[in-house]
Structure formats: structure tokens, C-alpha cells
Image (cartoon, rainbow, N blue to C red; front, side, top):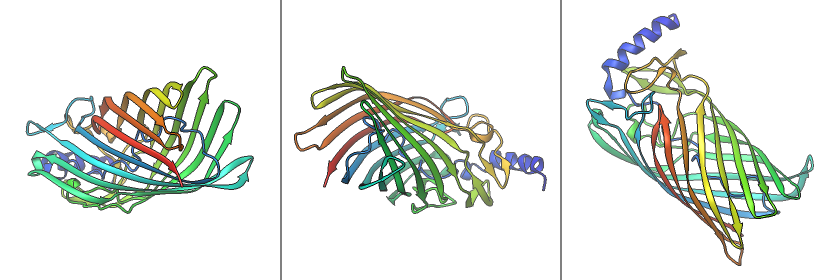
Length: 314
């Protein structure tokens, strides 16, 4: 069947079948905004544990950045998450860089309210696990650079008929990563982590009563932080920016626009910013608290994220 015919048929199904209208996938595989201070600085050889505890609340935004609504009611999402990250930095070097590896296991409680599907439903469990066997870190006098290739494993629960019950994406993805940190002599820091997410196919998708394969578009996203060190403290601003650069496709056809719900290709975009404070005690354990307000979002949820992060060495 030609793509144009498929697109026309999809438009009709999406308009009529509100029960599956939001069933794109589960939550983001990467928790945007997770890295800020010293994002590019791979630590010395050793084993490190990082815990990211947070809450997210938001409303679904349409292609214009307004609240998406079907039947006059917006879709809402609330989620608590606890991501457990283990980092091992070896004594080995590769291309002049320190060599490390990592794994991240996210635990998620998600509650979503889709009025057109009968209201609120929640789900709890392990999300999509991340592994990276080759993390490389270079260090200079006042700068640090770290690269890697994250692999996302579809371990999270997925329900093709109800997005409220999905906390996983049901597809593999890979993500090249490059992070840097600059530390000025006056105590100022600028850090950023650049990521490009390449997604696989969800072969068990369901839209508008149709079963098929869904491929979400590729995304460029950036975590950032700018602030000043003062003794054991760091105070400043942090956040993230994400832009989807290719279209979502269902059975090979670009997802058509559904006015008031999403734009053509369903290309997501979000910008978040907020205050961040870090404190490191005498034993070297760091505690970071931050609030990220999504000042702009379209074709995805937009809201607020609260974080509490702990970094410690074994």
C-alpha cells in the first residue's frame, strides 16, 4: 500500500479512535536533566554509586505547545522515579583516556490520567535498563571530556493497548554521548552533556485499532549546568533541551497531524531550566538538589521535575 494511502487511513483512524490516541510509547528512556555539575569529568579509578530520586508532573502538549485536549480534558502524568547507577572506572587507558563502564537501573511509579480512556491508571516496576561498556574520559588543566555509547534495553513493562500501563518503550536504542566540563580559576563551571538517541522499532504498537510497527524519531538532547563553586558548595542553574529531528512513523508512514493533539510527524521538543545546588561533604559524598521547569514543550508532556541526587564512592 502506498504511503499516501496509509497516511490518509491513519488520519481517519486517529480522529475516530480516541482510545489509542496517546499510545506512542512509555516514558523517555533517559531521564533528561540527570547530569549537570562535572558532567564531563570521569572520576579517578574506583567504583561509584549514583542515586537519582525524583518526581515529575506534567500535561500533554500539542504541536503548538498548548495543552492537548480530547473531549475538553487534558491528559496528565505523574511519576516518581529512582534510578540506580553503578560506574566502574578502571586503571586502564585507551587513546590516552581513562576507561570506565556503567549500568543504570530505573525504578518507576507512574500514574497517568487520560479522560478519554476512562481516567487514571498507575503502573510500577523496572524501566528500560541502560548499559555502556566503554566510557572514555580525558582530563586537562581546567577541562574534562567524557564520551560513551549508551545502549537502552527494553526491560520495562509495555502494554500496546494502554499507554497508562507502559513504563518501558518496547524497543532497543543506542545513544552516542559526549560531555564536557570547564572549570575557571574563579570557581565558575560550565558543563554540558550532548546525546543523540537512535531508536529501534516497536513492533507491537497499536494505534486507532490497527496493529503494526512504530518507530519514534531520532532525538538530540542536552543536559547543562552553569554555576559557581564556593568551598564544598556549587550554586547555579541547570536544565535540558531536547529536539526530535526525524518524524515518528507507523508502518513506514509519517504520523499525520491530529489538530489539538500533535503535529505532523509528532516531533517533540522541550526546554527546561531551574536552580541547582550541590554540596560535597568531607568524605567526598555529593548531594545535589534541583528543580527543572519545562518552560516550553510540544508534542510531548510538559511540566516540572524535582530531583535529589547522591554520588558516593565505594
